[in-house]
Amino acid sequence: AMAPFPHYPIPADEEQRLRDLRRHGLLDTPSDPHLDRIVQLASAVLEMPIALISLVDQDRQWFLARHGLDVPETPRRMAFCAHAITQPSILVVPDALEDERFNTNPLVLDGPRIRFCAGAPLRSAEGHNLGTLCVIDHRPRCLAPRQCRLLELMAELVMRELQVRRSSMLCPVTGL
Image 1: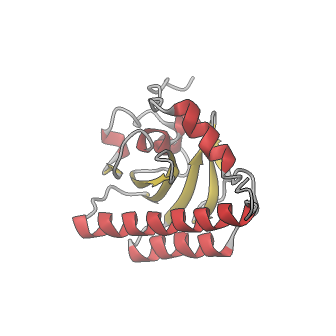
Image 2: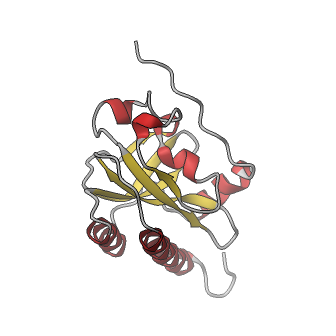
């Protein structure tokens, strides 16, 4: 039997956050070349094998774009990003095996064997963290402040892309 792993924290604004996420109309949509470019860029610039745009839904994290990972989603209870969305800045996990939040997590112990993860929150115009832009490695790492800043800048590019996409769905007259 799998060792249980700790519960993920629920953001204080969870109800409004989920409503905001749904309003963006992003879940289960086809891949987008603009977002695919950003995850490729994040992977290359930070020299990480995996980069993801992860949206944290009620019970799952769903990958809006992914580089270096084949699965489209994982359960929220296994998601590093479920922890990342509860804080205002980047979550960095230098070594998941040394972190009691993650050292019994199946994504750490089995495939994809996550050891390092850094996730920058994707903050909507309404102020809710919808998910993250995250980078992952199979070995312990640390990020220099300059690299954290680059991840934050790329997360801002993702949010701008999502805002452009959302405004293109709205009626120019009514804003609905």
